[in-house]
Amino acid sequence: MLPVLPRLPEVYDLIKVNLSFIIHAPRQSGKTTLLKSLTATINSSGERHASYRYLEALDGVKHRKDGIIEIENKMFTALLEEGYVDSEKFIEEFKSLPPLTSTTKVKYFLNYIRAKLDKPLIILFDEADRVSEEPLIILLREIRLGYIKRYDRKDKLSFPSSIALIGMRDIRDYLTKTRPEKACDF
Image (cartoon, rainbow, N blue to C red; front, side, top):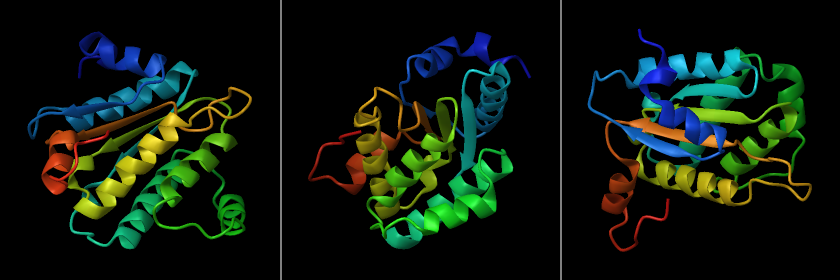
């Protein structure tokens, strides 16, 4: 495997200036290998935390509540495995929060995680185009809202600095097909 940065320097440039991005390419073109290598490269630099999440298992989860719960589970599991959160302490703290609706949970979850870390957080969602329509739309809205309001009152990042959505299809085209009455706002 060739090093990631020389092959796709523009991706790392986007991450350095805290931008989110979409990568779409055909099956078996090296997307997952690229993401795993990019995650390792970012984490080894010591400047940022990178977390990789594989979302293919959400294919077929149609209901918004179930989809959001599954997305949260994927994020929590990845953060736990990567050593960013202490499971017992995090679960107790998160359970003590006021109840959230399924349309605000992802953004709040990401804000909460980011506040616990000492460096900016980059999240790489692999197979994002496999998430079913309703949960995908909620996920994209929450990412967009969190991104817009990503700085707290002290100008500190309170949301992941970059989020990447990776898949075979361009998420923006997918949204246009699922919501033909509205233009894509991501």
